[in-house]
Image 1 (cartoon, rainbow, N blue to C red):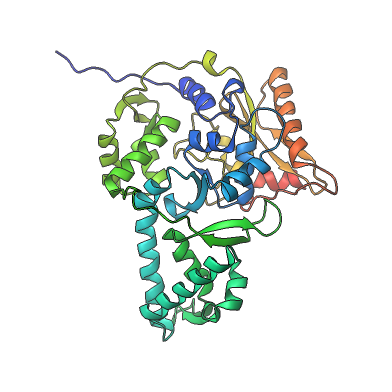
Image 2: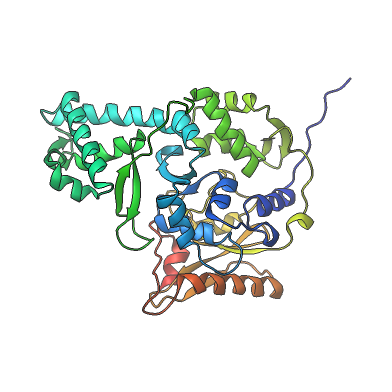
Length: 402
């Protein structure tokens, strides 16, 4: 008996899956920030505004997401901002945070602590005992205050204002403060978390707060189990995907990716770019009728355009230079029915403007125009509106913003 041929999943079906599972098709939109984050697994958090804009693009109705996201992040703690894949800050559902910590953040935190101790030994008289006492004082201060900025902590924990010589004897030699490094390590180890920012929801000047303590009944995940849990969630949201997509998204070694795929029983399927994988219960067909034509304005670093390493199935290669920066960070994008068809920006006066890079037809232009109005309705224009400038500027965004 011959081998069973792998099912083929073409680009059109992948775009239909994307519309439904990423909560972008009209009938698939979500009712809360938690639903959006749960469907996408992770929201890029390097640029704080991207979290709110990504959620807003996927919610039902015209009401903006700001209050809902702030509630989830800072009151209910049902969402958590933390370092994750590729040493990048993301926002995760709090239920997934232990798997992210065990599979990805924990090993990175170990490397970060080792690096800090080496730099302190090379450029100061501070050692592991000094670092441990400094961390104890920071945690004690946060326990009293509830939350504080790095500057405020430096005012009451003088050790945080200490400096060391970085890159001693090299061209990069310079004096650096220990504060950001210490807070970064504590955050990566899950001992403190980023709280409310100073200013509006677009600000990246976060206060730090004590992490919610784990109870004795909380399971301690084995890294192998944690990687399987993370891959299971990601394939549910983004499958099918290739091994290269998974390695790029997680930042793991290829052996860890393969082990996680085996652990979840991932099934190979045929894609235009080679072999992809889906979960064993995810082989059923999805068509355009399941998603319907849809329009969306997604922010810079949105998890949908940043979800895969191979992007030709939803992005014309000729448009990459206009929409991505040189490091591979995507700017604000306009979508029609599963494809990136243009970009958008906010001008200094608050106006939301967009440009299409391909002809999409009159019906699509009307739908895109409606999404532009919906976004402008909650971001706001004029003197009282919020200004959104991506942290990583891209050519088209710069041009449109004026």
